[in-house]
Length: 251
Image 1: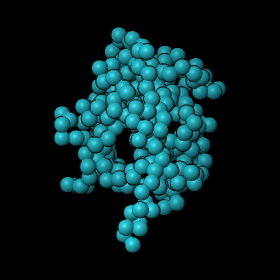
Image 2 (image 1 turned 30 degrees about the horizontal axis):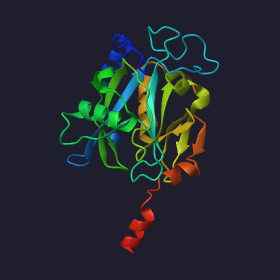
Image 3 (image 1 turned 180 degrees about the vertical axis):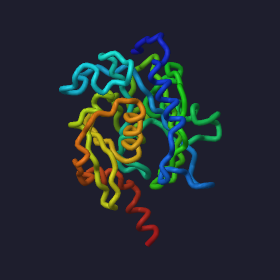
Image 4 (image 1 turned 90 degrees about the vertical axis):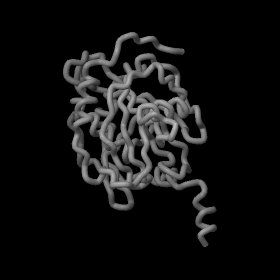
């Protein structure tokens, strides 16, 4: 079932896209010259999925400048299937590698979203792209593509081999201080995280959402001293299914 929204992207999204396009990329996320596989992700905003908007949030709190109090947009996330060779079990934005047949990152992001969750690309208005970012663990050079879900459709895991679940998460859930924390990886690296939609969002995706909240004017005070170790189940989900076979082959 589709939800017809004839209006184009809201002004705040164009402002956010401009801020993203001009942002300074931290040194650790700058792609090394000549390395990494080019890819794209779809950072898709919508009018707001049905459901409670963040417990205890006053009217207008956590909203971008100029937005109505009941305007609580959401982001589309997927949860990757546990055991994948890259980012198994992790919440993420839809997306993947830019293939030779793609015209560029925009087409790649929309194609991947259609393949992964059944998104209709014709119902998305693309408003801009962010600078290329590098994920050192997987070796991907990622271009975030910002879009507005003008005509939402029901989505779900269209490719169960890659996607375990989908979720539309309201911005107010990300900004709720009860849902924010810092997670510490066994390797010693720490980063932002969110407990939303029954998922622990961490890693690259959480870092990008953290940037979106800041540049979009949504960020609210939260307990930055709340630090937790990355749960064992998140680490287990990231172990590739074929790891024992590959280890035996190397032996």
